[in-house]
Length: 549
Ligand code: ATP
Ligand code: MG
Ligand code: MG
Image (cartoon, rainbow, N blue to C red; front, top):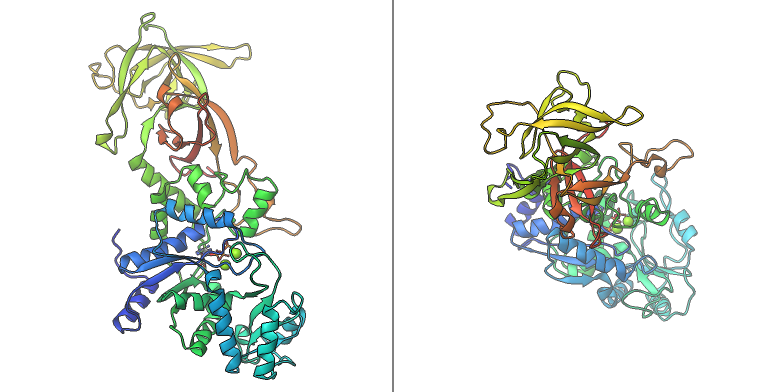
């Protein structure tokens, strides 16, 4: 992929390399292990790993695990798996919790140098003293404790002498700062919780701000890329590095990815899973990386989508159709064509020789000549789509109608002369003759027909389960709700339809994870729920964007 101009992050990186501020591009992806990764994280992963690759640097994976209450190894493992599935490998693996000892030592250093103090205000009082955007904060009554007293109390906090929430360690900066993050931010809190890595070693935990920059610094990160909500934290990030006299990375912010029709905050996704609106974190309708994976999206398509949308400095919404188009584009190149009938109608060729079966040749992928072709049995008794037949149809209907002709893909031209109806007058069978001179690839009939439809042979096809997935929400922005409603009120009641379909015989043995195009219908993947007796296919995406049409 060649882009004409550099985005603003690349420009900043190149300026800092040119000026000698940094010697290379060292980045990290820093997830908190408190949930599964979503498509927004994929954007951040592509950005961080991508920059390192472009400039010959490195990218670390660092778990930002400072909140033991919400974190779990289950998430650590899923995050690593998802990053690898996307096609990236970290240079080294770290945990912020590996730095707890160092952070503690640095906290004592700040205390000793008069830059931090122990505060006995409750969480609520601390908030109240902090003031607001329009009102300056007030100094804590404990702000002027001596270094000796602060050190003694801090060690007491570490040694478990006080109950949870009784005291905090705060940086001594400026309670009148226009930036609220600079109003004596909390560095440590007392919290008796078992950490997934350090177990019960600590009963004080560092805050995000007191952890993130120093973790970057320890790892020699040059560019610490994060999302816009941390812009106001940047002065604090730099203040800690300066006061400690340690390597100071450059924090650069970009806008979070937001996609139309999706809800991707962990909190919202958790609710959908917990309340059973979806089958789990990997439900093919979820915006998680594992949801897309199970749905059938390819890593290539997620990466090309992320590259294609670029980096934004300001919040905005990307149309989800662009993501759907990314997987269409990739599978158009990569997926073999197969025939499947989802809504079957019987078609019988009345002049077909009794008991005769012959083979026809079908191209696997016109986009990829190396993919070759396959042989399909043709016995004169077929399934076609209900939709492809009308007893009476307008002139522009180029599929099959009574008195009309159509080509059966990779087969013959057939002429419909009659139908069979049930007691209610519904057409249950279409009767045709075939033109023996018209076989695809060896057509000498000289006839031209406007339409080609897909089919499967009724005596050779197999039955499979097909899960027709559609969008989970019906509106552009599910977070916008009327009073008394929440985003779940926008759920699409038809986001999953399960049907039986007739398919080419080989598809009944296709391996789990295989992706194909069902001709004229869309792209499908064999789901993990398949059994030796029943294949299950998930619809990845239709061939064209038909939403709302
Ligand atoms: P959420 O609550 O939506 O899961 P988060 O920001 O709490 O998001 P983290 O685990 O802290 O999740 O994120 C890890 C990295 O991914 C961070 O650098 C964060 O900025 C980035 N990130 C998270 N969401 C998005 C998004 N929608 N677009 C781009 N980057 C994102
Ligand atoms: Mg976070
Ligand atoms: Mg979060």
